Length: 218
Image (cartoon, rainbow, N blue to C red; front, side, top):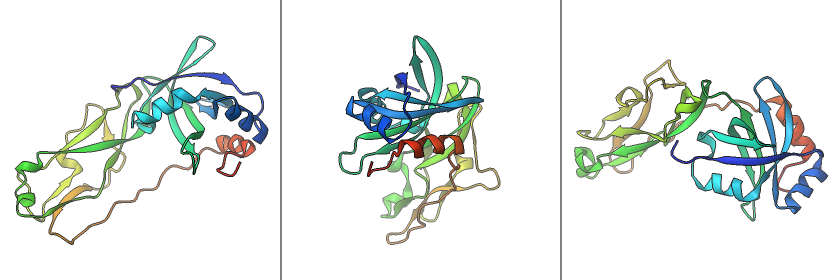
């Protein structure tokens, strides 16, 4: 990834609402570190580091380095809660990983060569079905984006996953069909966005999050 994310964290001893609120009063962001075959740990993150990570635009599709007492751990953000009014980060979930581990991430799709697309030149519209594609990739080889070429496409043509060159070692999580990423359609026609199920959050993380009371009202 082009943007390195680093979180300097401390262990949070209190895991209830009081502990989470105390962290926020001290300019910290409460979170949970889990995965990797180890027990979940309540942690505090630096607010400025979380904001910086969110502003990269790749928060949930990048690995990050967690630093605690000089020791480093590779992690990937799994979720973030934002305050509904201030839009400030309220809670972060981090998952322990290894550099050579296969992980699942959403990678943004960039559409290239709209000026070389006959359908668009005729006044048609680019109907984007998937702005991002879920891929299985190595943790140390997450691409910033994948590219869909619109060159030569006319009205009624589609861009499918088979038309996209994926990075070495990456593969889509959907393997049972050649799914559509976008299509060239006449004005007023829309195929609508795709909807995929997302993996449920781990029960152990939910237990700590519930004890923190990390909702907008807390």
